[in-house]
Image: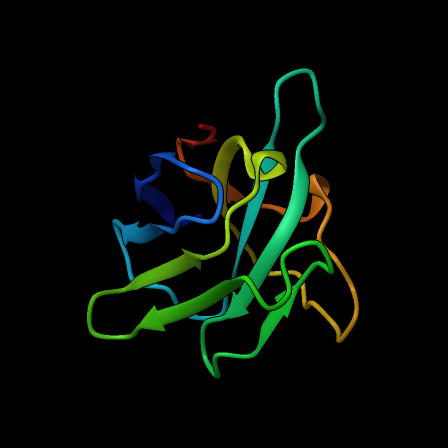
Length: 127
């Protein structure tokens, strides 16, 4: 499985923006779909968004549609999650994740679908 290295995150006030990146290490992305999960304190790890590497097809949960955008840079073997209009409820540790399981339109990943995880990065939205 590909190794994932995350960067980004931090603290922002409500309404602000942050960007996360997830870079493949050891080998390039190929057939993976790269997803983003988050886990709030005392909460379960939940699926947020995903992008299919070979064609850029994207998925978002309803809670982030219109606010979060996933993209990829083929030359850098990196996937990005641009987060705008952040809310307090978006506070969590964010994980990128790679899966070889096909993700169909309207479907979400569960943690069991994931082959590789990033190390996680904290996103805090507060005043």
